[in-house]
Image (cartoon, rainbow, N blue to C red; front, side):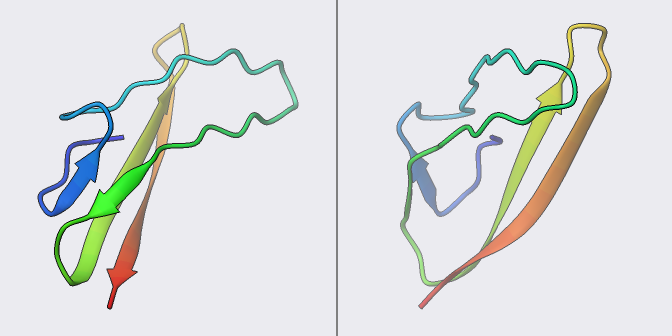
Length: 64
């Protein structure tokens, strides 16, 4: 997960987690975050395979 202004993570800056995902399956990975501001905070998570293939998703965390 990329470092985002207004969001505190346990790892400080970028948070990286290495997991092994067998073919045709899924694995849940959890990140603890604490919002420091009110508003919409973009959260972007990237996945990268050992052969350098990658994918990602970006969602907005709405803090009221």
